[in-house]
Image (cartoon, rainbow, N blue to C red):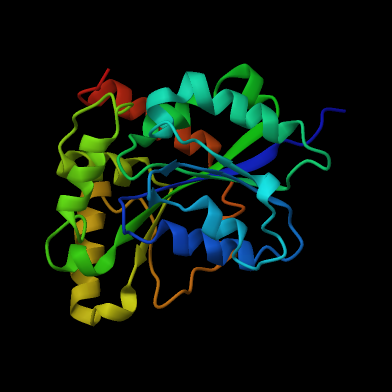
Length: 247
C-alpha cells in the first residue's frame, strides 16, 4: 500500500500583508501536528526564520525551518525547492503538514507547477494555495501598504527574474489562490470590508472564498485540509494558457 502523501500549503502575499502572523497562528494551532516550514527569508524582509524559531511555540523547532535565502522560491525553484522538499521528506518522523511561504514578489504559479514533478507528487499533496491580502491597504485602493518597500525589495533581489508590475503581480497572486485571507480586518469598517470583498470577487469572478480576519484570528481548519490539488493545478494551467507569461 502506498504511503499517504503529506499535505502542503503555499502561503503567498506581499511584504507586510500578514504572512508571518498567519504562519505563527497556524503553528500555535498545530494541536500536535508536526508542521514543517519552508520560508523565504530575504535580508530582513519576508518571514523571519529566527523569529519563528524562537517564537516559544512547542511545535516550532529550528530543524523544521528551511530558509531559501537566495531570492523568491519560484524564481529559483528548480535549484532550491526540490532539495528543500527532499530534506523535509527525509526527516523521521515525517512532517504531518508542510507550509511554504513565498517571497512577497513571487509569482505563485511556477511553484504550484513544481508540485506536479514526479519526485514531489509521489510524496506530497498540494493541499491549497492561500493568498494573504492587506485589507486596510486594499480598502484604500492600494494592493500593499508600502509600495516603496516592495520596490526596494525588488531592487535588492538579484535572483528575481521577472519585472511584473505590482498591480499585475497582485492579480496573479489572487488568481492562484484557493482561499483569500484578508488581514487587518479590525482596521476596516463594514463598508470597507464590503469594498475589499467586492474587489477580490471581481478579480476571481466570485469563485474564490474570501475570509476577513480580525486581529490574529485565522482558523487552521479554514486553511488546512482543503484538498484542492486539482483545482490549484487547473488555476496554474489557466495562468499559463491565458496570461502573459514571464520567462
